[in-house]
Length: 55
Image (tube, rainbow, N blue to C red):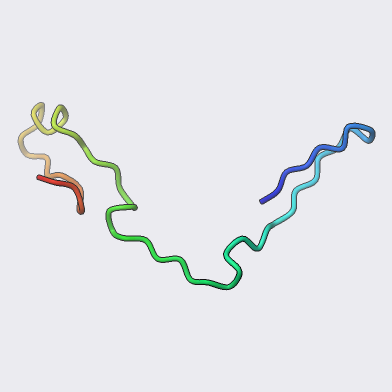
């Protein structure tokens, strides 16, 4: 998306951008979650690390 501000008119416009140019994006399962980290897992040993991160 492109956000543009027209200073003279004091208005904003929003336009969608075709940034992928028709290609298909693929994301690994790891990209859907953050790592919990050792600190949180140490606080609660029942937690299991999210997929794609080292256990």
